[in-house]
Amino acid sequence: MDSNNSLVDSVVNIVFCKDRDECPEPTKAKVQGQIPKWLKGTLLRNGPGKHSVGEMSYNHWFDGLALLHSFTFKDGEVYYRSRFLRSDTYTSNMEANRIVVSEFGTMAYPDPCKNIFSKAFTYLSHVVPEFTDNCLINIINYGDDFYASSETNFIRKIDPETLETLEKVDYMKYVTVNLATSHPHYDNAGNTINMGTSIGDKGKTKYMVFKVPPANIEKKKSPLKNAEVLCSIPAHRMLSPSYYHSFGMTENYIVFLEQPLKLDIMKMATAYFRGVNWASCIAFHGDEKTWIHIIDKRSKKPVAQKFYTDALVAYHHANAYEEDGHIVFDIVTYKDNSLYDMFYMANIKKGLSEDAVLTSIPTCMRYVIPLQPDKNAEEGANLVKLPSTTASAAKDKDGNISCHPELLCEGIELPRINYNYNAKKYRYVYASHVEWRPIPTKIVKFDTVTKDMLVWTEDMCWPAEPLFIPHPDAKEEDDGVILSSIVSTDPNKSPYLLILDAKTFKELGRASVDASIHLDLHGIFLPEKNSSA
Image (cartoon, rainbow, N blue to C red):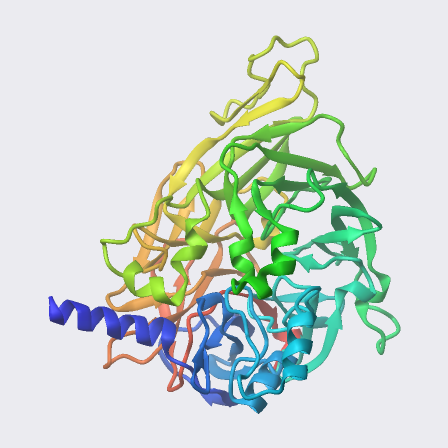
């Protein structure tokens, strides 16, 4: 028993708790196997890399200070580097040698040595808080620029080659959103489409879809200067808007789930005084509906018909597309919000024990929305006419349409696809695989047609989100490679970047790095024209 506890402690420390060091200069990786010659560019990733400052530690894994890292492919070689995001949050914490800026799961309280006036100012600043700029979730491309992002109104421009931190950008100067997703979509015209929540603006709380056009001719100006609001949707309740992490997009429509995972704005405003974190002000209302909003990008208005499904929590959309008068969208869903709680640092150790299981495992569901439902259909009659799915939709007594999904598979998270098939009919999902704990030990390729699943796993290895890179001369959807950075808890094995053949899921090669690689969250691949070693 003691040896098992020791192993658990070691895994927790190496994978989650250990503070990483920077590697700001390019470090050549040791390559085993073959790196495809056509693979040229940079894999750029983001995630928490430092969980303590001085003698203080963050309460939640998602609160850790952002650490950017990259793998650059050039002439069959791989070069690694990493840098902490020099956010205002990072700078303030380092100067104070303690956590002084609050994160979603960790409130920062005044130093007891401060005078009463400093303490009073700190408390007052949390009534209408200025959120952190610790942008640790993803990398977003707006115009020619790249930004580290989280879900607040702040993003940080970065240099994708050196990973240096550049200017701080406030969405509120361009689009009135207090919160915004880190998972935008990119269309064929080069536009970036994103969503955010505007809280209490002119007495209203609403969800806003906005578009940022391609590169700005005026290079010195922010690409967000030309941002355009495509549509806004009033929240069902002004003081308790829905929390959402991503949304779906087809060729002509935006798919937005207003799920009953709600932010309580009044509780958030008083959280600091009550001695609780902002995360405690989110609650799941299992007795409420999940409203499915369909926004027509051409008319810039929501469709008139109301759609809904049962209460759920979803963080990641896999894909969405249109087929024969229907919208098909695939999402990873949960029956509650227990996933977030599992990542409190105090719970992570328990999460590596089979005594602490997820109360709701991730389930990939397919929903189908009939865009032109039969107006004469009887109540309860299935309005979905696609023979390829068991998903259904039916009118209720109020004329709204209740949607029931098809279960595609269980146990996957962080779904990625060949992005050339985004908003199009597709077949393959690449994802992390979880079982009774939220920490992935496998990555998989899931076939949405046959329901077959290919798996990669290795003992004492912890893979990050798999990213698909298409072959430049691809003939089929799965012609390409999968990249995933791997943290190893084997003392005899260095961390490495894994390269898989996306078609067979067999290993092509790996690039081992003599550096302190962290378990990251999300990222993007920049073809060679946007990067150099």
